[in-house]
Length: 200
Image 1 (cartoon, rainbow, N blue to C red):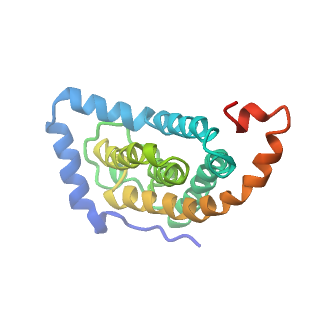
Image 2: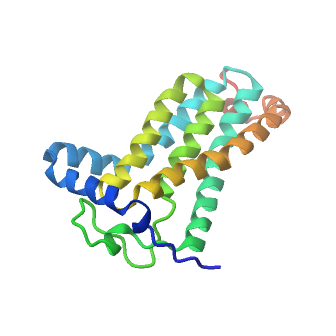
Image 3: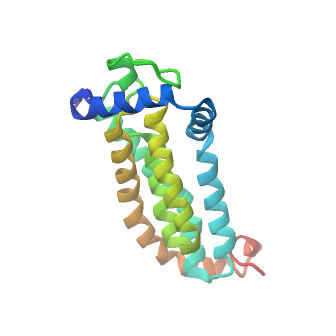
């Protein structure tokens, strides 16, 4: 089923207001937001690595959760991308023809929901389960990623918000299930893979 959703009727006015604000903003701010929008996913990867590193000293359950987190994020991305192919919403920069900071993706590169926001939302939930101290950083970074995708002009606000929700909703039950991997982590601790699951 293909819905060909028309996103401009939802919050096209807000999207236009944000992109116009971006055009009037200082160059350093636009550059920083554009850089984060493009390369910020590396921060989420670093947070996952940090959570795994810290979890090795926190016991098998936390380690199992931290090891499962990257796989959970991949599942969330795939779910979001499948959602996109059903809804088939054109990018706002294609529909509204406004000036944007980032080059508009080509026709057929669907907008709803945002893959970047879905990944960010999934990582934020995964980090919440794995390491509460890093969770605040992950949560703030996820919100900033969602906002940045609107700021640079490649997504409507509802694309970004829904991406966060989809990523979080997919990740939550999978992270709950990941706790069951503790026995496997305990077995791995007696093998050559011990450095993967234990601090010492």
